Length: 277
Image 1: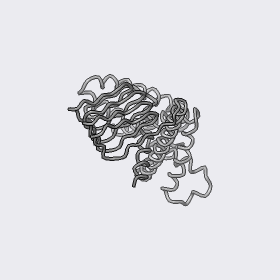
Image 2: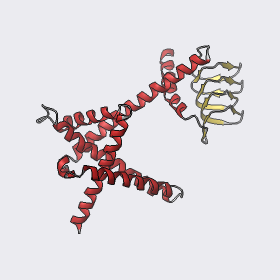
Image 3: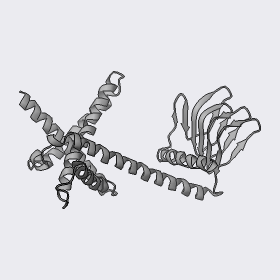
Image 4: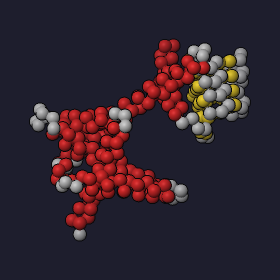
């Protein structure tokens, strides 16, 4: 059981360490995440405490976890922590009378450089894991979109009609316009829901475009002609998403396909409006 708690602690540390990429101060009503010293008073109750590069002094109640990177945790005798205490690159001082329900995990390599290397490694692993999860989700969404709209999709050549470059340009311009408009609408409370709806349109367009492009990519692979549709979409989307994960080149390809998908969606909407007239 103790090993299980340590494993869970390491997983939580993995995800929390990704915030080191942008360790700016963040505070919510019941969650505290800061890059400066944090003191929880005796009469205060919070959900989580996460501190980067400084110490944390706990006198009050923490309902979930206390996680500190490159700092110490001082747990006073009045403190109550219901779940784990995790310290990386620091020490834990727990006074008699304090109540910590779960394990106290302290990882200290006794050297600032070693601690920094360890945290850097955790950030890299966390980023890789996040990218892996995102890739899997994108493949699954592409398969679902392809199966849902399979009979409505035309081939890539029929949709673009040799105007792929034009669609990419129109998609880039539209994306910029949506971003600016969403930022302007997000300033007001009333405009926030409209801003969210506007931002959903490029996302939906990208997923639909991924389905079209995945089917087109799968056509280039021999042996998939008579396979079920889900295998075709899975194979094509897997190839495209794999390219996305290449440094630099993947980002460029992602941007091009995103703009192309948005441009194709605009063309589809325009054709529908013309038919409606």
